Image (cartoon, rainbow over all chains, first blue to last red; front, side, top):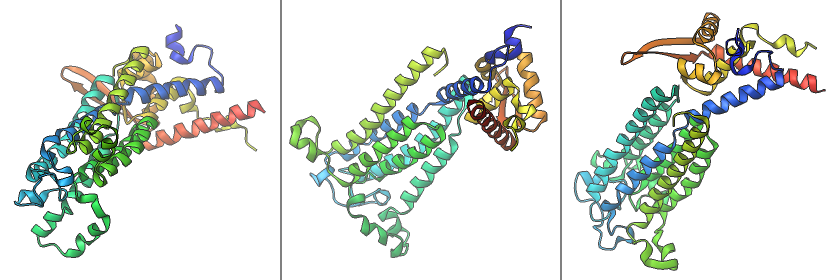
Length: 256
Length: 100
């Protein structure tokens, strides 16, 4: 009987309890790292956020943007913002965010078939979609459109500028990432989520171009700063995560 | 006070089976091929251990096809996850006992 037949990686003679625990820890760590695929949702949602740029042209600071919704689709806007194309921005988020969650679910399934380990990703997808639906259901225009009671949105007045830039979908994305970090059991993704939350809040509450103005105004146009910073953050850390995953995979000869 | 050795479960304690449960504790499902590669076991050896674990109600196996290729996905039951955690606890107690 060969060593592989007797005990595989645990050896022939039988390791002591301490050595057994170390081996089990290595097996567990290897499986966790083989399972990790959060680079994809980070890059995808970063791209989704950046994809909204054309709809927010000249919106930040209201430089020439149209104030308020003017059509039925406008009422689905996620805030008073949305630049010269508030209806376009609303439609863009309505389609791209749910679609992105579906694409993430499909990606994880395809990857599981390739690597042989499957992560639980549906809680992340469901959380993201539910949060997005809640955001949609409480959008100022939607509530008025369906003659909902005023108390349903009275809380919004307490949130100050949160809705003024029409970028609240970014907040929904940032909150759902914590769920994914828990499912992936990844400290890396957890800390990325922690760092991204204030970025998402800042994108909704502050004209980030004001900060760039003090450095060099022309680096980032006013209308693009908030979206570029939020989307660029996710794309950057998604790329870093992918590189780290590939480096680990090539060391261990595993699929990534 | 009971000796930590008494806390070890005969079904779970076998090294390869512990390895299977360790992988399944970390993932929702693992495919047969992944378990075989990660634990460096042969097909027959792994199949025998999976059968023991399944008979004990600690895992479930789902056999299917991906195209024409047969795939077997293995998943730990709640009892399997609890048994694994209990086994790890017993092993750690044993290590502490030895180190005293």
